[in-house]
Amino acid sequence: MSSNGRIAIITGATGGIGFQTAKRLGEDGFTVILNGINDEEGAERLKQLTDAGINAEYYGFDVTNEEQVTESINKIGEKYGKIDVLVNNAGGLGGRSRFEVMTTDFYRKVMALNLDSVFFASRTAIPFLKKGEHPTIINFTSNAAWNAGGPGAGIYGTSKAGVHTITRALAKDLAEYGIRVNAVSPGTIDTDFHKQIKSTKPEVFASWANNIMLGRLGQPEDVASVISFLASEGASFITAETIQIGGGQALGI
Image 1 (spheres, rainbow, N blue to C red):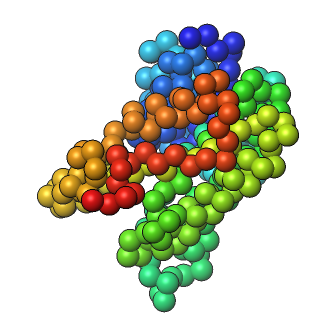
Image 2: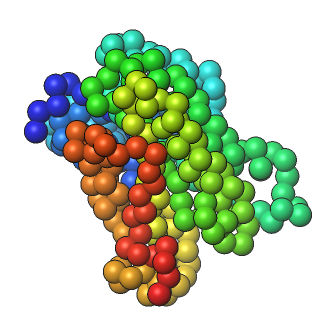
């Protein structure tokens, strides 16, 4: 599938879902720009992609740092003259804390990781997306945006609810330029995000599949294939949507 040199930036692309997304978009013909904060891991991931014949570059920057995000995305946009796809994948739980004992620093850290990052990257990318082909932004939210997360994950849920709304707000803001903005909401995906519980309580981890209608945990590829579709011309009439990728988990069984 030819892509006429389309450019995709994927933040947090050294991890499970981010890397699979970069790989899939690379296979779709995109030049993929990986972002991460561990440059060693970034170099390793970059080699995996280039060895597979994918055009790729790695940019190390912290998505919570306004200056670094602005400088890096401007550099990428200026180098290629446009950006076609921005995948705001970077984010995370950041730890667990109940509100009564939550420090302001922890609150700010989690909000910055999940919400500020989307704002900083999107704001900087917009002028370059305006020059893109089928330009689109794809964000990552979570079931926690609706159910407010498990014990101690309340601020994670709050930040992801912000992502759900900023996705729709950006879609409204950018529709006149033909820039589409959507989000994906992965359910339980078998990645390092769950590494701790997988190693300490494997039976609990395995039991999670019982709460999923399709009877299995998701794989990073399950998410990457939906992003591939959202980034394609085939999704040209889809904007302001959040797609659940959870095997029916959101409905409970």
